[in-house]
Structure formats: structure tokens, C-alpha cells
Length: 155
Image 1 (cartoon, one colour):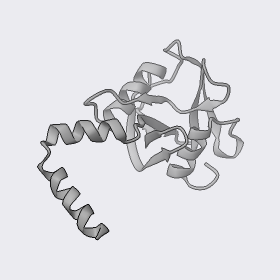
Image 2: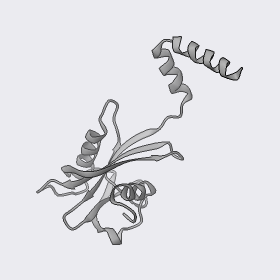
Image 3: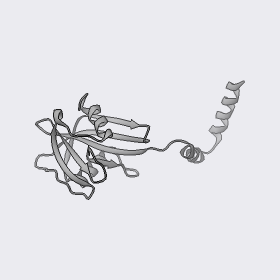
Image 4: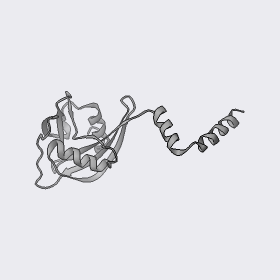
């Protein structure tokens, strides 16, 4: 009986115009913020980290993806805006999901383009520094997750 009722409800749902279905789903489904970050390493296998003005611990360059923006484009844009660094992507990327904070991050592994030097270019960035993987500072939770996701256990 329950199966037949559910099947009938799905048939009714299928007749609802697609734009209306989308609006209903957006109203009742949880919404997530979606960001793009870069794990940038150099030839010495150091990791580039940033200290944001609004966070205590170190994190990754990156930020929210704009409407209709591709994640990879957002990662390039945010890295350029925050630290003035041009990057090229290398093998190793991940998607991390934090259900507690309803956050999804696309994490891209990158290296600096030759001749591009990082520096704090945005009011939100206090400091930019390279760290050996065995000597990382205190990290924002999502930065630690991202590092482990693309570089392996331990960052």
C-alpha cells in the first residue's frame, strides 16, 4: 500500500512543471556554500599558506565561487586577488564536504607560475608564507582537511 501511494505521488511530482519543482526543491533542501581553494606547493615541496584577517589560524588561498563561475576559474581568481600569484594546476584535486557548516570546497593542487611571487594583496590577507609539510602552523579546520585530501595523510 505504502509503495503504491509513493509511486502515485512521484507520478504527480513528475507532472509539476520543472521550474516549479526546482523552486520547491530549493526551498526544502539544505543549501551549501561552495568554495574553491588552492593547495600550492613549490619545488622544495613547501606549502603556501595565508593568514586571514578574520581567522586565527592559517588557511589556503581561495574563496566562494561566484554565480555561474566554474570552480577552477574561481580558484585562479581568488588566488590572484588575495596573493597576486599566478598558478598552474598539477595532478591532485579533491572535493571536501563539511555537513556541519553546510560547506563544499573544490580543492585544486597547484604550483606558482615561474616568476610569480606571492604577497598579501587583499585586505583580508594579513600574511603569506611557505611552510615545510613537516612543520605546518595551526591550520583552519578546512585547510587541514584540504591538505590531507590532496597531499595525503599529514598534509
